[in-house]
Image 1: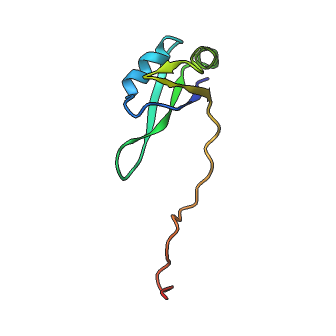
Image 2: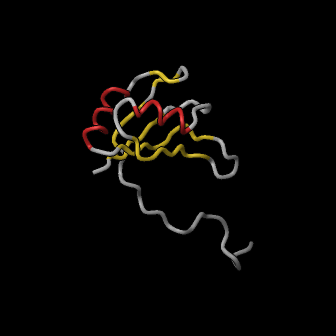
Length: 98
């Protein structure tokens, strides 16, 4: 079973290929996703890596947490399940003008 890993404190210069190469040292990488701001396209400084197995995921977490990449100490941990989001993004509702 695949293991999803959270990677935090990323430099804004890190790309998905660099992250893939780093995690490949611990085993087979199934996917890499750096989270970006929808308005600017700029990295938000964190992302997710999915490893092929739980064992490889645990190995990556233990060996990479706290290591330095582009002068930043990485935070590497098991990803928590994504929370449900409501469809609303806030703001005014039509007809509710003052």
